[in-house]
Length: 310
Image (cartoon, rainbow, N blue to C red; front, side, top):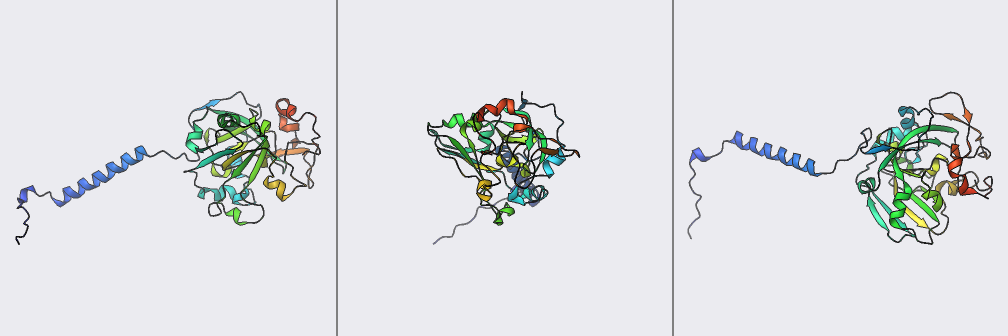
């Protein structure tokens, strides 16, 4: 059997090793640039959130300093003290991220977070936020009304409530290793509350991408209710016929009701709600009914006993 022989190559035709290696390096770099150009950019906290327009929802109040609003947070998934979220939330991966909208809807759908960002124009809205622990802040949020999303999935005639479920991942969220609350975190609104134009799906604050400790990549903002109603890091929105049981209702039904409207006439069992202190300020000020949004939302509760339905 004859043996195959390689053709004789003239030495002048052989590519020198250093040129070959340089060419390989160039090809790898070019491929990397191409892949980077094709890959979607991942918004990061601190980056400007593009395409945000000014809204009619503004306040004359002075804004809470950015450092206070992003370093003093309630986010029990990262710890029960106010400083832990800013310290520990950096481990949270916000891409890939999907939000399932399901239940009593005609068109259930799973939205990619970046698809959701393009669903409606983003607006900057300056809202007051009031915590049940008697501190408050004034923040320019960026997002659009939750109603924009709910209208697209077409609620059925049986839909009366909306339940929000947040991410459950103890590896990323070390506070979930605690049995203090039942995980994942759940919150709920009546459908008319959820459809109110003030109810915001927020993707950013202060013109920037939402920081992890403030609920990235997507959170709810319901400005006339106590802060725990504004669920963070949402992964599922479910429309229901019956009222859901939220996390804090389950943990302390005598302290945390379903509605959680800001009401200075209804004390928390362990402290007064009549006054509040803005972050960055020393003196307290009177708490406003519905956090100052009574003109917009009081009609939602006409005829209700708000001291019993707290």
